[in-house]
Image (cartoon, rainbow, N blue to C red; front, top):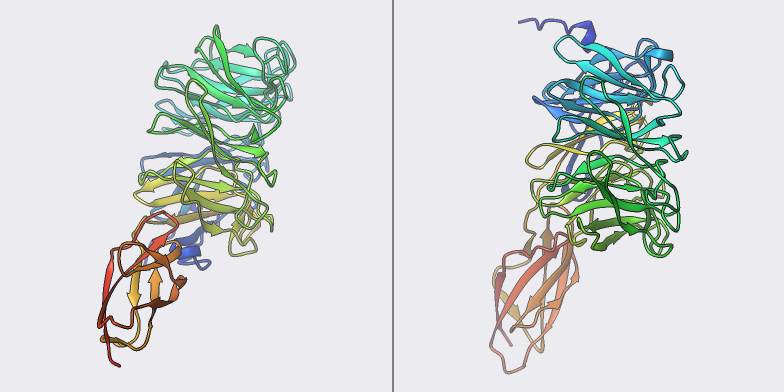
Length: 478
């Protein structure tokens, strides 16, 4: 039977499904599932929303007026659908902070507006009606930065990067219908009782206590950023941490509140290689650095917020790497088991430089977008499927193991969904390392009086998990 033709609205992007665009790193399943076009969702960035099985996002370029778009993407069909094309000027344009979805529709900010300082807009998803709720200006803050947040009170909160009472930007709130806009905190820079700067800040998150938490990239006593919490009306503002000039500094993505009660975030500077890293911090400011990035293909500079997987691991995207294409990584909440799941290759078959956070759509399945490269040099949508599995270890050679003299020689293989880091053996209780990993060998000392030797084998992966024990029996033949 002939399949019906797709509607033109679904064809404005070349959503080309590729079963496996690139070989996956360390056993994960990575695939590019769609390519953006210059006129469509060109260079998606900022926050994404996932609702009703659909992903929602925004791009600062493309659309019918080349002023940016709001779009949705259907993972079931790998198709984009254009929701709104920005017109520029007073109607807004160049949205760079993504979207959030509430019961009232999609909310986002744009960089262009009537005052040249951006807009806050809403899209009613019942009819795709677009409305501007606020035109930013100098007196009450301009240049919105970072994703918006819907509070438990139903209001919308966000950060402006510039101007305001002290010319350092601040934090605003607005009712869901666009009324009662208020700059509730004006940052005071490196001094004062509202220390911090809006420039580079990536938004707020609400804690379980109903207070708002966030970081600034600049400001504070050393001008290297602060960690703050505040009331929803801005009347109280507490600084629990000012980043020093040593160690990690300049936090540069939105905090993520984990199920364990800690906030996790990333810093752009500091560490041994001065490439920043990942930290966790409690609601009272107790702080731990859990990972440092290095100048290597592993990547650095995490601009989208981290994602907590249903498996309990943290996932994220690094914007840069030594080849300037970025990577996808995973680590445990204590900083252990850091693993690279994919290194972006760029070119026409893969994306690069991810600027959106990952979204888990089902157990172990994550989606994300890049703003660069791909078939049309306008970015890609990618899918990553990964699991946390035990490694395995196997013995090669004859099933009946025999030995002579004072050495027992064994060899075999080991495998994991990510990476085997060590194979170990023990004849008693103390395990020792074999040579090699996925292909391993061991020369095991034995007493010349021993007639029968029992050896236990196991492997360890970079998730910190051990394989089941494999037991080997070897018999002397001399």
